[in-house]
Each structure stands twice: as C-alpha cells, then as structure tokens.
Image (cartoon, rainbow, N blue to C red; front, side, top):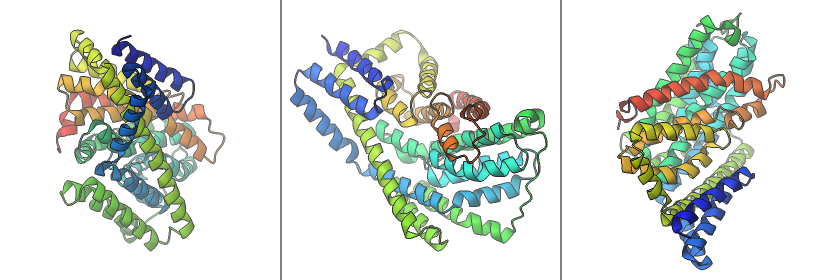
Length: 434
C-alpha cells in the first residue's frame, strides 16, 4: 500500500472517529500515529515522531502569547468592563430606533478589542444586553440573535485567540494577522449596526414593534471613568504591538498585568475570583496545547503520505483558479462549522489546504482572515453553533428556546457571509494596514 493510500485511509479514520464522538485532538493523534506506523512500518518511529511533534509544536516563544491573552480576557470579563462598555454604548445609541441593538454590537466590538474570546462575549452580553432589550420592547429572537452575531467579533478583532492559533499553525506573523483583522472587524461591526437600524424600520416584527429608547443617563465624567480602563488596555496592547514597542507575547504579558491592576483598583477581583481565573486560564491553555500538538502530528503525517501535494496537483489541474479554490474552501469550512468548533475546523483543514494556498501564491494573512470569518459563520449555524449554546446556557429566560436563538442569529450569519464575499473580492481591506 502506498503512502498516498495510507494518508487517505488515515483521513477517513480521523473523520470516522470525530463523527463517532471522539474529541478532535484525540482523533487527530490516533489517526496520525496509525498513519505514520503504516507508512514507516515501525511503531517506534511513529512514537518518536509524536514525541518530536509534541516538543517542537509548543516550545516556541510565540506560543507564550496564548495563556497571557487568555488570562487578560478572563480578568477583563471578571472586572465587569463588558458592562461598562454596554452602558456607554447604550447611552450613545439608545435613542436611535434599534439603538440598543447597535449598542450591543459596538459594546461587543470594544470588548473584543481587549479580550479576543468570543465565548466570554456571548456569556457576558447575554446577561447584560438581553434583559435590557427585553425591557425596552425588543423581540426575544432579535435580542439573542444580535448578541450571538456580535459576540463572534471577538474572533476577528485583535487580539483574537483564533488569529493567534492560525498564526501558530501557519507560521504567519501574529502581529500582521492582528493588523489585518482591524478593517474587516470594523466593516463587520458597521454592517451589523446598519442592518439593525434597517431591520428596526422595515422588519419590526423581527426586531420589535414598540421599541423604547434607553432611559438611563450617564454623565460625561461617568462615561469617561467607564471607558478609560478599556482605552488604556487597547492602547497598551495593540498600540504597543503596532508601534513596535512590544512583541505580541510581551504585549500579552503587559495586558494581563494591566487588566489585573485595573480589576484590583476597581475592587472587582477578590482573591477567590483571581484563583478561579488562574485555574480557568490553565484549563484553556492546556486544551489549546493539546490541540496544537495533535495538529502538528497530523501535519507531519500528511506530509509523509504526500496527500497535500496530490490534492494540490489535482486542484491545479482542475483549473479552478484562486477564487474557485477559495469558494470551495469557504463552503467546506462553513459546512464543517455545523458540526465542529472553530479550533477543530482549523486543525483539520489547515494542514491540508495551506500547501495548496502557498502553491497558488495566496497571501496567507489574507487567507487567515477569510478562514476566521468563514469559521465565525459556523459559530452561528445549527446543529453545533457554540456561540448559540453558550447564550442558551447563560440565559435566565427559559422561554427562549435554542431554535429561537438559531433563528435570531440567522440574519447576522447572512450579513457575515456578505462581508466575507467583500473581503474575498477586495483583499486590500485585509492587507491595507500591513
């Protein structure tokens, strides 16, 4: 049996294990081990390859950025800065028709710029924004849908944990990916906000027929007090990276330290909460480590088998062209989003498609932004839709069903698809700041 045949059998085994309910990194590790064993004919060599992959994949200095940004995001969440962002945004946009929906979008965008974890955004704004919108006459489906749609901004607007993971897997500069995510993130935020206003006027049965303006008044001093810590963190982290003062890893450390200092100054981080944040940071980092190690094993097995070269040659001979290849890739990514989480999609697809993208001469930074947005769409689609399940778990109102959340998120998934098409058609929007 040839290495190519073994490679395809290993891919089939991996998919079978995933669909059987096995965790993706374990499925990747098993199929990789079996594949290398069959190709080389030695379990000892397969074991050594796995050991080398485990050591080399997470020993890089750049990998330190993961736990640091996770820690910063969790501390910011615990410190209540999401609540502060929403208060100021609702004061700013509350009197516009559909204003609380717009406020939710921009509060999520601000929160994304200091966390990078969409699940945290979904949980926080479900508790903050949904009750406020319900009191103001917004329909339940719209209230949860706008939270679901805007929560995924955390995966696109830097510092994004998914962009960091893509950078590690593709060996692309994390700083360049952060820069590339800014304009698409702003474009998606503005598209959500404009769509919300349009829907409020022309689709009141979905948004709400008798909307009330926000009544809570926040004075200028209070608004500055709430926004100052957020702006400080953004300037420290992103300004430091883009200004060339810090590497992304150093920026993560400074951001985490500043977030802890702000939370302690606001007296919102008791010792018990700090311990909880530290433990959760460890859990998330360990899971990401396992994901990256298994992805490294999988990439090496594929390289040994020759599958990427075979697929690349087939795609080239099929004369699909760059945009034909990207269209198929986006379609597969969105379909996989209905059954897998975002990290797993990247782990399964990137080792297979990156060699093809390189063969086509595609800019891998632009390709990364396309990948992130396509994956984000999957976060809103059934049956998995992780953001939807997080919202359901965070809701106090049990009358809102899982189907209601999926239905509410559907228009925003379509908006995201339109933005993705624009980004594909106009690569400049991703690469202008690099």
